[in-house]
Image (tube, rainbow, N blue to C red):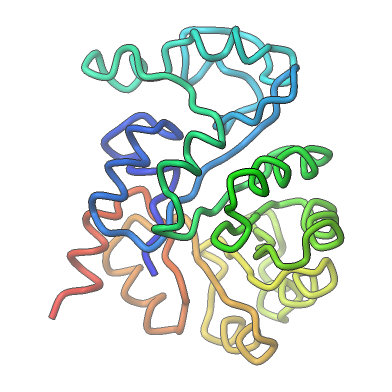
Length: 240
């Protein structure tokens, strides 16, 4: 499966409806977005803790209201042609995807699980979203609140290589109630993918932007490639 990282983020402003729509037009299997909860409880798409990098505003998401965030320009940083693009709410993206693909929802802050699940529940999206997080406590909480929702533990480059080779990430995922594992591509190997599959864990690798590397990871048995360049990966991995 090919998953568009933050939408079609190589060409459009990340975590915006435009990036999500363009990714869907490509025929991807999944779209990944990052979510945070603003001061008045609205779930918005934003990777960073603050809005400075990707908007013309300032301040932490948790300290801003939805009224303040929705007025920000979330496109100009990527190019003048994207001026006026807005920060979307999670429900906006759920309505756009509408079960056409698996929506990977990365929870950036522990403590926001109930609010995020409430939005997904109200939008009828529980069967086609995948909650992902670096935080085991997030996965554990989602498992207890809504066990039918897919859950993926993200394991990054900060983990010791020996821990990864030994299969510890599989244990970490199982221990917190995940049913999938998202591995940083530089830590992936056929051994750990095999180990995960033996325990019925699907494996995604991120963020893969080189075609040859994607081909190697696919040959190792990775179930999903998360990429900033889904257009390139579709042409390369689905050729012939």
